[in-house]
Image (cartoon, rainbow, N blue to C red; front, side, top):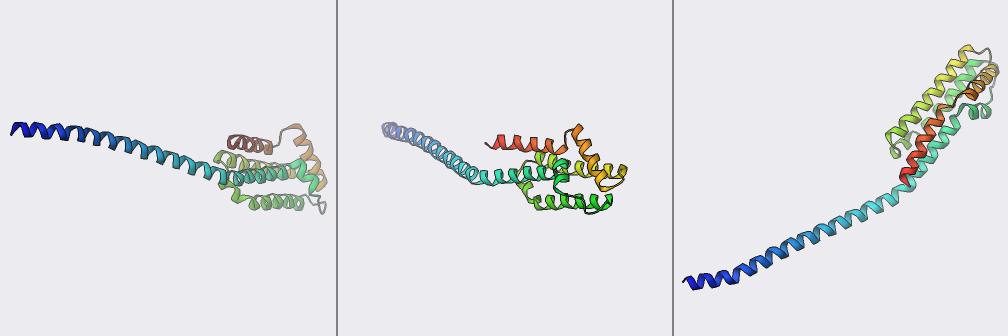
Length: 170
């Protein structure tokens, strides 16, 4: 009886060891295959989303350029000598540009979007400050241009954030 038991163990033990080895090798193979598939899917997803993200960065960079006070004042002439009407025209233009590009925030980082929003707010606040001390629309234009010839516009900071984001994407 003991001989049959030892004989059974002699047959079962190698089969069990072989089964365990095959199980762990197959498990590792499946895990490796899943990792490769996940990597392929991530690569394909990144390849598909990269052009969209780059286009969003381009549009937001263009937004920053369009609300740059020096460039905006040259592009948008005052309709009358009323500084408040001109201020409202400029703010309306900035808000319209912003609303047109609002959806782009889903494609950029929170830091970049915060910088863009802060630049927009800073430009509007500066325009309001200059309008208070100006006598006319043309005087306001001159004062804004003089002020921004001395300091860097806040849009430049936002542009730097966008450029850094593009570098990370590429």
